[in-house]
Length: 101
Image 1: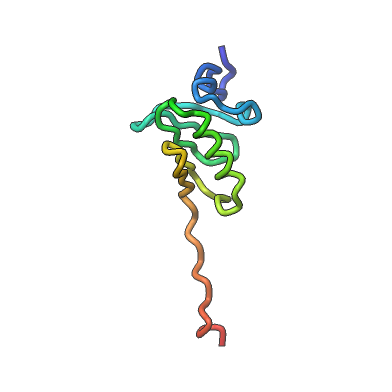
Image 2: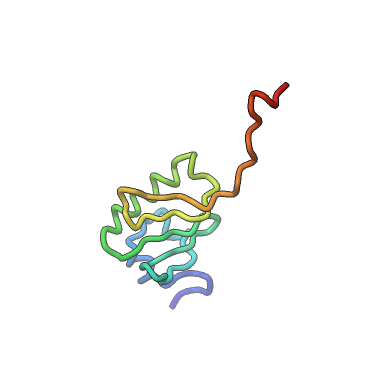
């Protein structure tokens, strides 16, 4: 049995989550294209099928460590060689040289 708000252990292990991230996973669920997870204070994670889970976690860790992924609302590692971080809030346009006076 699992505590309320925590995913069942077998769901986390099915994703083969690294030990240091297991405690942050709040929920594992099915989406039309496979498995997804939510993490505490982090983006939604899209894994797809359970195959190649280690490669997917490795890609995920690399994306999360990259400064450019900060603020992403999701990370898609269904194809671990091409991870995608997205859902960023729109940025304000930077002033152009002609508007600086």
